[in-house]
Length: 145
Image 1 (tube, rainbow, N blue to C red):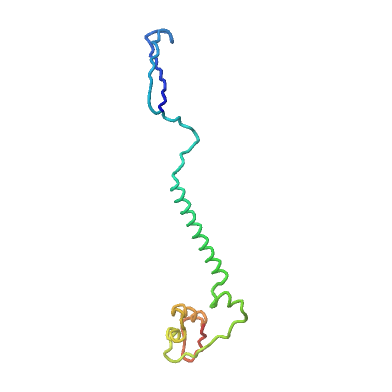
Image 2: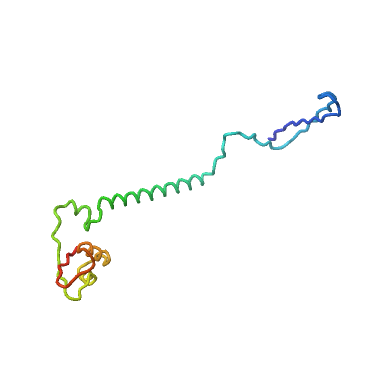
C-alpha cells in the first residue's frame, strides 16, 4: 500500500507587498514509499551476530582474567617451596638427603644422577638455592631437593 503526500509550492509574484500578488499554490502528488520520519534519540539496533561476537570477546577476556588471577593466587599461596601445598600442611619437613661431592663432580652431574623424573633444569635451580650458589668443591656436602 502506497502512501501519497502532498507538497505545495508557491512562487512569489512580482509584487511589492508580501502576500499580495502571490501565484496560486501548485499541488504535486507523490506516489510511492514515504521515508519514515527521523526520530531523534533512537538508535538503530545491530544484528544479533554483533551481540554474539561482543559476548564472546567479553567472555574470553573474563576467562583469561580469572585464570590469571587463579595462577597468581596459587603462586602466592604455594610460593617458592619445593613441595606441593598439601605437603606443606602434612607435617614436619622430611630430612634432607645430602651427598658428598667427589673430585670432578658438578651440579649438572649430581642433578643427572639424582633428579628422577624431575626436569634437569628445575632440579639444578633447586640445587643452587639449597646450596647457596652454583660453586661446589670436592668433599662438600651437597643438599639434594
